[in-house]
Amino acid sequence: MAVLVPGAPASAWSTETQRAIALEAARLAPASIAGALRSEAGALAAGAIEPFRERDPARHLKNPGAGGRLDEVILAEAEAAAAALAAARPWSEVARRLGRVSHFVADANFPLNASAADPAERRYFADFARYAESARSRFVLVAYGTDRGLGSRSAAARLIDQALARSRQLYPSIGREYRRIGWASGTGRFDDRSTAFAVAALGYSHAVSDAARLFRWVAEQGGRRPVEIRIAAVGSGATGASD
Image 1 (cartoon, rainbow, N blue to C red):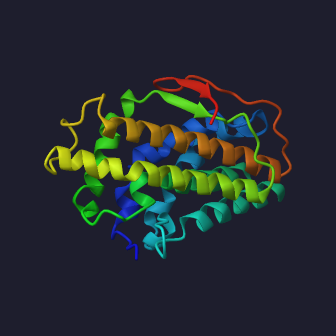
Image 2: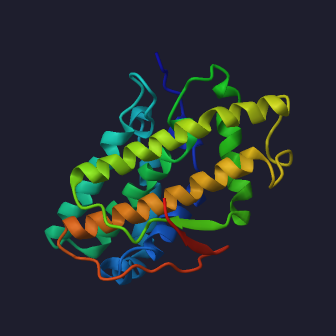
Image 3: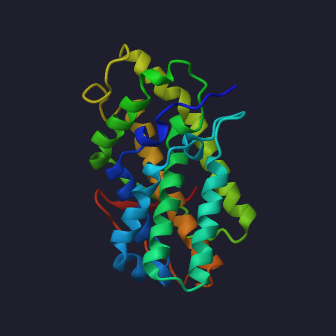
């Protein structure tokens, strides 16, 4: 049976990375909400780090078997954001809720939150998160399918399931990398041609892309039909790509 890793919510993507993912996703949001999210960037960023205060690690994980409720949490947070938008709640509240959506979507795209198959995972969980933060400035952001709407609730759920499945495919490679370096710290040991760098960069781009697609879904469900999608260079740059 899968086990929950104590302290995982605080040890996955860092505070700064979670903020960055939410803000990058907002720049890829449809025009119907993009302006408001720019104006409420502070609330969006605050929402992205709010879940760090939660004490239940099961909300941040989804391991095969009985390990976590992350998939349910993402969908519930997205529906709550859509309901707030439909009820014409203040944009600061909508932005904060979208920040929460982004946080949990980012969790789903952190491979170590999607499986606990490696009994040695505790040896490198926190270190991989620190390594990913140290490497983030060198990631090239790729937007995966952010111009495509999701439509139904089941399609949104499918997006979440696909994120978790992708993370599980990447999961074993992280353990292999730490075994390769003898369980040392990855910072300073993994270069930008390493599998560890590729996994972290891919997880980051998919976190941004999936958050942006759910922002679009929230806009649609909240009654704001998107007109266009913006794919703009942010930080190290963003490029469009299909799934």
